[in-house]
Length: 106
Length: 106
DNA sequence: GAAATATACCTCGCGATATGATGTATATCA
DNA sequence: TGATATACATCATATCGCGAGGTATATTTC
Image (tube, rainbow over all chains, first blue to last red; front, side, top):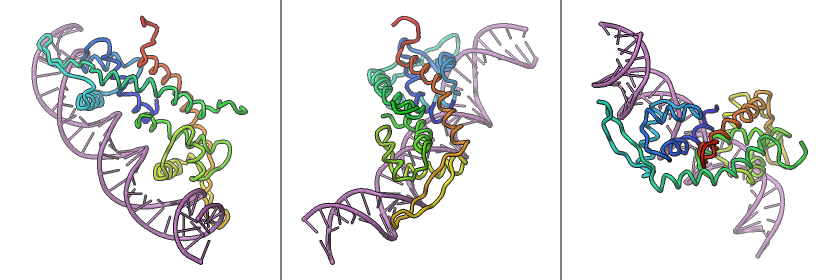
């Protein structure tokens, strides 16, 4: 998929990946793979940004000798997802314009 | 609308704006206004990029004393629009994931 | 005819961002 | 013992939207 297009979806994707239950970096990448592929460097950058924006909170826990940072979505993070859903109608209208199905001749 | 989200749509929007007939900067902004608002600096940057990428060609013409640069879409530009249309299914699937309607419980 | 507004173009620099490359460390499996 | 999977992190680079600022002419308003 086009790079720029992906950009706009990533934040909401990552937030959605931890919406139902807390998760950690490595797992988020795996869970998102069927929808969007993203590298570790990309993910950790995004997680850092979302944390700074208070859209998620972090808790460190040990799991089988390895460290894990579990991310938990905040109310603000849920708000970000809602925002995306609200934008969707607009995006669909833009799509119809681009695809050339805006009620006129086609 | 979210900024990053918009980014991914702009190229295809601009190309769509000149798909049916050649157009020029000032008019493109007006035509796109109902769908996306973009500033002149943004548009001219995009036009330059699309020209460099051979997705459109340029022709200068005088109109009532003022200069106008008319942009014409190329085969490659049309290909770019097609690419966007192909990406759409993927985007819809991502939307369903984010909105939480992926066949599971909801 | 002066002032305001619309038309029409352009460039520069900033901040935001995705990503490849690179590094560290442990657990598991062949 | 070596390869692979798990798990984190940082840095440099390239791309991009956009505000600020600039130039110039045509049209409309007072």
